[in-house]
Amino acid sequence: MDEISKFTNFSHEQLVSIIAKHKDRVAFKILFKYFAPRLKSYLLNFKISNQKAEDLAQETMLVLWQKADKFDSAKAKISTWLFRVARNKYIDQVRKQKYTEVNVDDHVDLMVAAEKTDQNLEEKQNSGRMQMALQSLNKDQLKVIKLSFFKELSHSQIADATGLPLGTVKSKIRTAFQALRKELGEY
Image (cartoon, rainbow, N blue to C red; front, top):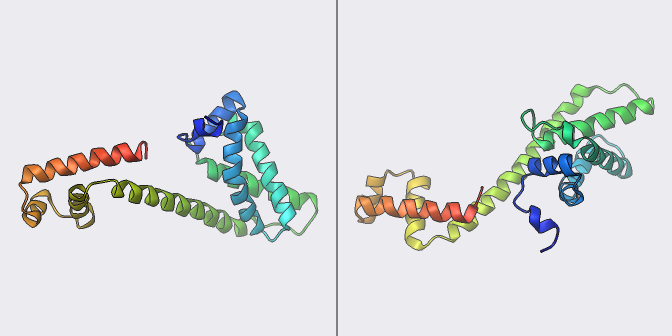
């Protein structure tokens, strides 16, 4: 078993907690691979050089390594926290170089857009997991699930449409749910 595979079922917030408690390099590596490119893309929206965006993204990830224990998952998602740190790093860099005054309000929209992009990616990944899980169902289970949740038919309407007894419809839906839970795990 390689080092990374032992963390495959951990959320980003759980990985941050592991970094905070144990300074685990593998957990950090996973988060770095995931967030560093996203932070760099976000920072490039501020019209800075590719190298400067990369440097600021790395500095942001260094803050995660050094201050993981300061992160509070009750207040924000880790992505929100990191994008805020990145924005602050950018503002600090502009102040140091004595550029024109930065209006932070102009950049809030960029932060919101970056968060939405991250959410859209998560939604696509979850949708893909659901599609794979649905494909694992047998034909009868898939049919009753589609009628129940996608067509929004009641159990008795499904029984009428399929010609199956009401108890059988309920049983097939329950069995399909159990199969989906097993396939999706914690998701």
